[in-house]
Amino acid sequence: MHLLKFDPQIAKAIQNEIKRSNSGLEMIASENYVSEAVLEALGSPLTNKYAEGYPSRRYYGGNEFVDVCENLAIERAKKLFSATSIIRRGLHANVQPHAGAQANTAAYFALLNPGDKVLAMSLAHGGHLTHGSPVNFSGQLYDFVHYGVSKKTMKIDMDEVRRIALAEKPRLIVAGYTAYPWKIDFAAFKKIADEVGAYFMVDMAHIAGLVAAGVHPDPMPFADVVTSTTHKTLRGPRGAMILCKKNLAEKIDKAVFPGIQGGPMEHCIAAKAVCFKEAMSASFVKYQKLVVKNAKKLAETLVLGGLEVIGTENHLLLVDLTKLGISGKPAEKVLESVGIYVNKNMLPFDTRSPFDPSGLRIGTPALTTRGFKEKEMEIVGNLIVKVLKNSRDEKTLKSAKKEVEKLTKTYSLYPKLEYA
Ligand code: DSN
Image 1: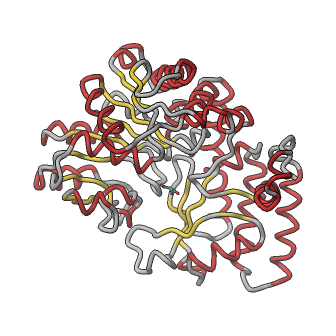
Image 2 (image 1 turned 90 degrees about the horizontal axis):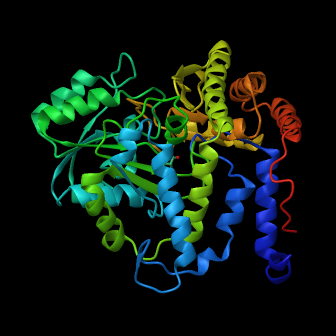
Image 3 (image 1 turned 180 degrees about the vertical axis):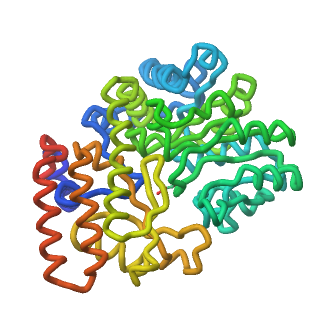
């Protein structure tokens, strides 16, 4: 009630966002819905505290309870991502990075000198801006060379990665992607990294929840450093973390603070701790299994409807729109007009521009959180086909919008939150 009274404009915008979320189908592969417990931690007075430094080594007084939260977050992160106690004993966690880009910045800062060579996936084939895009600091500060996917399989060709690594001798090899619908062979990457004497880093932002639940291969036994956001499949607050081997702990901690960040966001760190606790539950494992099953069912439905799908072995799939005669930008727009949220995406070997590429990226984490199972995914898949094939037909779009509303009525989000 405080917000509504003091700032009705902001209260109204939040209420409208809840309504939008409630009445639409969220299928952006990197988005999810946090629990009310996570929201409570995020909205707590921990936001008031300055806590530069690390637990028991702060530059400000009064951090007794902040330390409790950050220590819990650290211990839970280590437990969550340790398939075995041996890994756990050798693992270090830093839960302070504000976002995935900061986690990657800190990892590079810890492992590299400016100008060092790095081998990563190109942005056009599913990599991330911070994996050496020329418009990003990473591409400007370091000497990135890129691998991509094979034209034949649309998967990473490990022989090709090895060939580039042997020729280029990078100091660091990066795996982990934003638009790659297949499982990643971390053991094969590690073997190549060892062969050329490179560090091996995994950016598991997209698949962290799947990894935690054991439904995607685990990078932890192979990587020197693993970075991740906490808000995608992991379903926590917007933020990030870094896991690394103990021998790199000091370097990583120094790179995060004082290297690239100041005061950590302790309300967010507390919410990360809540998210890690949730992710240790049996229901989370069930949820992640269903995320993957739902993606498969969605892919099957789209293919049956005549769409070309790349993937899927994880939580997302790529749709090639070329044969439908519609490009990514209008496809994203028309789906949005009926309440289905996806994002336009470059496909590997795309000849179009990133502003209006040939593909869509579609994910199932958020709808699965909402309670959608394979039966509903089939309905949603058929709706997507109908809308994309009849994108100019007002009658079809109107009826699709109604069907979306009907579907969303069964699964209400945040029914207890009141902002207006
Ligand atoms: N923006 C994220 C995504 O959508 O995958 C990556 O940072």
